Each structure stands twice: as C-alpha cells, then as structure tokens.
Length: 97
Image (tube, rainbow, N blue to C red; front, side):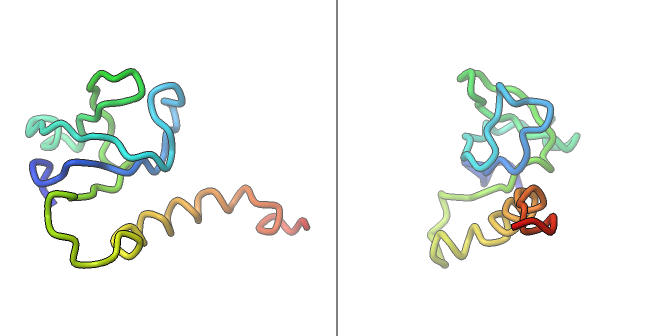
C-alpha cells in the first residue's frame, strides 16, 4: 500500500514516544515520498505537528477507498497484533489469576 493512498494509520506501538503517540489511536498520515522510501511515515502526532516515525509502528488504513469489508474485519490484523502485545502483560498469560 503506497503512502499517497493512505489517509490514516493505527498506532501499534508508542515505545520511545509516549508523549507523541498513543497505542491504538488513529493518526492522520501526511504524504511524504522521501520518508516512505526510507521506511518512515509522516504522522500528525499528539502535538498537532507532523513528524516522521518508523512505519512498522503503524497499521495503514485507506479510508478513501470504498469499504469492501466491515471496519472490524478491515482492522482485524492490527487488532490481533495489538491485543497480542497487550496480553503478554495480562496475569492470565503469566500464569496468574
């Protein structure tokens, strides 16, 4: 999926940027071919300014295209990833109650 076809990205990890990004939040993507060529996305973060972050911390969502699936189905891969990351902290995963 090319950056210019994407309007939003779901944050999967805010590691290293807790004041700038919230895990699980949608962020507006600003088209930037130079950043994309280097593996980055230009995102409007919590400050309201646009900054580049590594693309692997986001799941790209193209909302300009007609939705062929329900939004929940469209986001399923990202939700499963985010849930798996959060669940490793869950007491049930650590053998607790």
